Image (cartoon, rainbow, N blue to C red):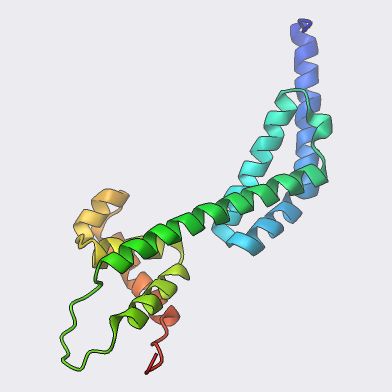
Length: 182
């Protein structure tokens, strides 16, 4: 490849920067809307950033002319699918752990089958945001105290206690008692 003079390289990089900025401004809303609708706002933002990082990489490699709106949409689509696959794998692993680990010791003699209750708990956990799910599992399944969780997550104890309270409220709003006789 031919060597460029310093001025020529700077001019080329300024042009690439302008092209990338224009591409971003034209497409960021549609890319984010697509990702957010499928993954939620937080992961939607992350995926949008990943898509435009991939676009910037293509521009740096001299292939900016190939980065079009359809290219961006293909990349965001693939990144969403990758996230779904990873989430499905995590959910399958989580279900296996939950199935092998009792969630609580029942204190009633008229205990109904634990299987529907366990499934209802897992379903409710699946609907929580990852941060809420993680703090509930760390505390109620793994038995970590608020100070232990604070240390692991690099948060204050007060922040963990607040997070636990919000996570419990979110869990209660998602949990549906299994129907009797199931």
